[in-house]
Amino acid sequence: MQQDAELVILKTFSSQLGKRLVRRPVPLPGGTWVEVDGVDDDLGVFAEVFANVGPMKGGQKRKVALDTLKLVTLQRTHPSAHLVLVFCDESAKNSLTGWLDEAITTFGVKRCVVTIDPELRQRLIEVQVRQYR
Image (tube, rainbow, N blue to C red; front, side, top):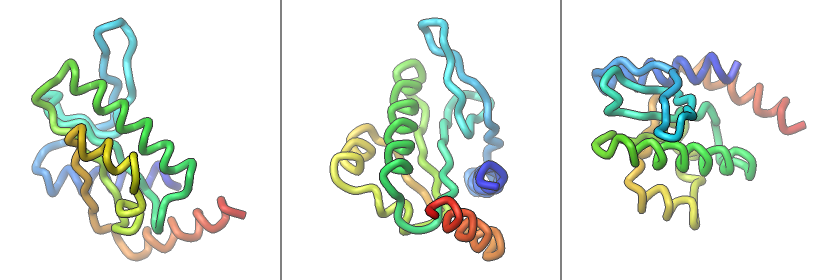
């Protein structure tokens, strides 16, 4: 369910950006690679997507931190790339505080929120409630 929602969020963000972003692996200089939620054809935009509604919990914040590190690592080999964390909920985006907020800001990672269909939003809330039990 959340992976499907992430695809919808990515498609909405792509539309707003005016660029086609797709999930794909991006090679790193050491011979490894990372999977990125959204990458454009020119490797000029790297986006990580979060389908969370409401303030993020500890493990979710850890995921954001790791994805931020992934984006910053990619920028070392693609210095002109734009790095973006894409959310579907303002309170999820705003729950990133303290050192994580500072790191995101320091490394120039942008945060944006896209609007999703109310029905999809409600389904995400229901899934999250089941996950927390």
